[in-house]
Amino acid sequence: MTTAAPTAPSASDAPPTAPPSQAGARWRRARGPIAVVAVLVLLSFAVSLGARPERTGSLEPEASTPEGSRALVNILEERGSEVTVARDSASALDAASGDALVVLSSSHRLTRGELERLAGSGADVLAVQPTGPALRLLAPGVETAGRGDGVTPEPECRLPAARAAGSADAGGESYSGGTTGCYPVDGGDGLVVAERPDGAATTVLGDRAPLTNANLGQEGNAALMLNLVDGRDVVWFLPDVPVQSGQSTMWDLLPPSLRWSLVPLGAALLLLALWRGRRLGPLVTERLPVVVRAAETTEGRARLYAARRARDRAAAALRADAAERLRTAVGLAADTDADAVAAAVALRTGDDPVQVRRLLYGAPEDGVPADDTALAALADDLDRLERRLSPGA
Image (cartoon, rainbow, N blue to C red; front, side):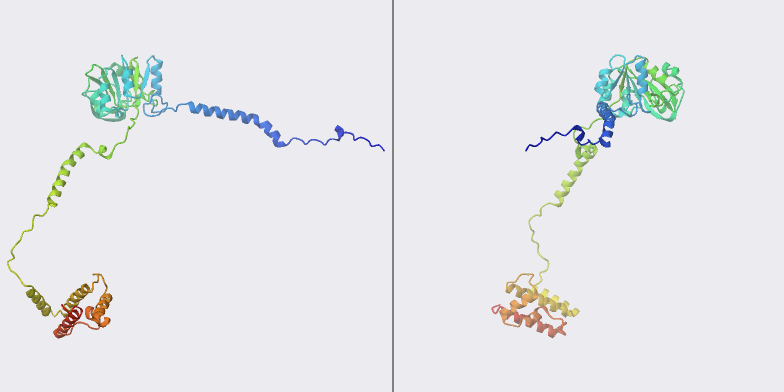
């Protein structure tokens, strides 16, 4: 008997393949745009990490905000002036060599030593709204006169830079003194030129508006600034906020006058302590004018009790003294209660504890002794109790 060999299944007999899912098809269509967006996000993140944030603030030479001065810096550089931005006094003094003009703002951030070095540098200075110390060191003889509340005055002076510019926003603070004064306002001038002992000149401007981006194109502000620079290189000196180094103690924060006042105060407290805390000297014996015997004192006190008929107080005094003597005799502490004292005394004398307690501390029903005879009887009973406790007493 023979068997037939099994035949392989044909291609037509194979099961059909499943169609691709819709989710897979959507992913293949969307992965290209997703990859592009992811690359753009990564590039933006990498660029933002390397970008330096723009500085902001009043008269900031790199700021494009309305109060910044980037527009004026760009105009100066386009006209051939080299503008050097200095953030500390050392950099400003290094760059102020030759015929450069130092534009100083935020002078309140400088110390007196830094102002003195700038005043002796021999460079011309344009000080914008300087502080009192900066005004005295950089512009000797110039003082603050008032404030013009932002008016726009005419130059009314012989300074060529101001006469060519015409009216300008120089109506902020006004000053008196100096060799030349322009833009009169509020009893002074909004722009003053003063000569320094080192031979250089300081121009004091009482308003920040002519240097800002928002006001540079108004009135004659741009012309005034360009005429004051006069084609020279500019050192834009905007000091950074000083960084506090170390930590100050409470003693360092106290003004010197208060520290010196502590010296006499401490001396006064020391003298007061010596006066009030002095040691007592040796005892001094003093003869009494009258010597009173103890028996007379006792009799006098008894007469006072009798005169006031204070038999209750007399009875309480007799009981208290007797109870204290008996408590000491039986060796009890001072804070022992009445029941314990009566029990200890009764144990020694053989009396009833209730009667002993009533005799030593009294009872509400006993009341006040009716007369002197009852008071004397109470004293006799207390004496007999003490004698029974101490027969040899």
